[in-house]
Amino acid sequence: QVQLVESGGGLVQPGGSLRLSCAASGSIFSLNAMGWYRQAPGKERELVAYITSGGNTNYADFVKGRFTISRDKSKNTGYLQMNSLKSEDTAVYYCNMFPTIMNYWGKGTLVTVSS
Image 1 (cartoon, rainbow, N blue to C red):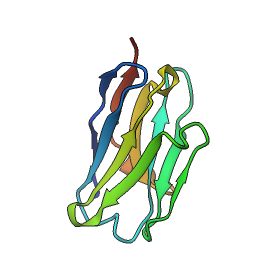
Image 2 (cartoon, rainbow, N blue to C red):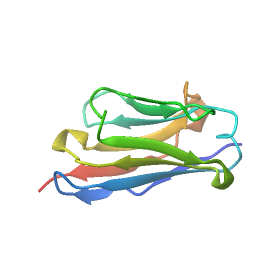
Image 3 (cartoon, one colour):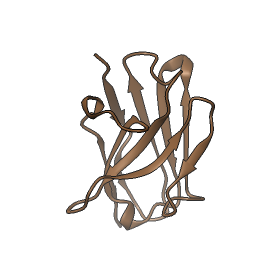
């Protein structure tokens, strides 16, 4: 069974940066698109960005120009580089396939942007 484990979250000041990682238990990123999602307190989970197996990327408007999604197929790991963080970016961040697969949701990693 595939497992996705997110890491790299933490507390950061507004304007700061974080790099999230998503480690997969198998070579699922080689043939499938992967995405990063987030869920803020009291809100529904939303798509942040995705990257196709061919390397094409797509971003939600609220992160365009600030976040960068990437993945290393050799390491079965995906990344989300987050720059110029804002307080409204505070959320639990998850990785999954794109489109999502219900059984692949992990525990996520908490990102808190606060001074």
